Amino acid sequence: MENVGRLLLAAITVAVISGCASFMAPTYSPHYETIDRLKKMRIEKLSVGEVQPRDPSAPINRITLRGATLSSPDGTFAGYLEKAIRSDLLEMGFFDSASTTRLGATILKNDIDVSGFRTGYGVMEVKLSINKKGVLAFEKVYSASTQFESSFAGGVAVLKGQSEYPNLVRALLQKVYADPAFIEVIKK
Amino acid sequence: MKNNLRKSFLFSRLTLIIAINTFLCACIAHPIVISPQETPKRNGTTLSPKKVAYVMTDADRNKQVTTEGGAGDKVSYFPYRDLEKPIRDVLRSLYSDVFVIKSPSDSDAIQGNGISFIFAPEISTSSNSASMFTWPPTQFSIELFCSVTDPVGNMISRIRVAGNGSAEFSEFKTDFGLAGRRAATDVSEKFKQEIKTNKRLR
Image (cartoon, rainbow over the protein chains, first blue to last red):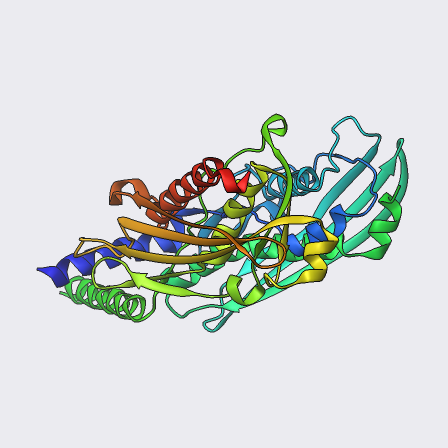
């Protein structure tokens, strides 16, 4: 009887994981050592523009993990990144929604790949810009990639891919905050 | 006849796929995330003017723990990585500034940042489920032990708080770490209250 129950559950799991389920990306948490280093510098207050693209059907806002959908708790992955940047600036004391120095970003690549049985990959590429009083002062493309243990079992690989997303965003923003060129343009 | 044979073949294949998936999933601990649903908010008017630090290294963050799930299966997660934000948010909700340091004896970071207290957290967890068929834990406990020292290493206080979370299968949807996330919310709120009522930490 127990075996029948487990078989049924596995059947449901297979069905869920092979197409109709939607998994939510976990909450972002930053690389705090980088945040602590940056917050000690004399940096201008920044506002944050709407991270693009906002269209939920844009390829960067659609991540699938062996057929299952990875969703953002903020509607889109552009919204997820915008919230992460705003929360980091707040943490560092550099956020001011009225500031004329505005940070903008467009996501160019955004994917978690768990198709491999041994290794999973995360890749993200973002074009980041700083506008000062409406004039473009800085523009640069940042990219980050992560590797993590995957699995032959879909039920395990999907969950590993799900938990990797905040690590990918952390890796990308860590690169931005540690970049001397980025720091130079927002220094007071 | 041909149709029956085809149905039988398809059913056998499906059973085999399910059996392989069940076997593989049972062999590997199911990964879950236990980051809390809510963390304490910072209110600028009630903060202590002191600056504090907490100790956490990349080795802590990469420490993977495996505990019991249901149906004889296990779950795995990263307690320090998932609980770093709530620990920091608790401290940020009580003190003017918070830093992370790699060791309680990192005097350069302690003196350079004007730190008054150093919190060194240790986390232990347990989980279980009475279910015979489903693996996500329905009960989750997190114990947070934190020694608090001054900049020269004198013990100021020892804090021990425990948070519990439970979740029913009908609530999981695809949030299989829900009981753990509830325990994390509970432990972070208790951690905050414990510091708040400890006069030696104000």
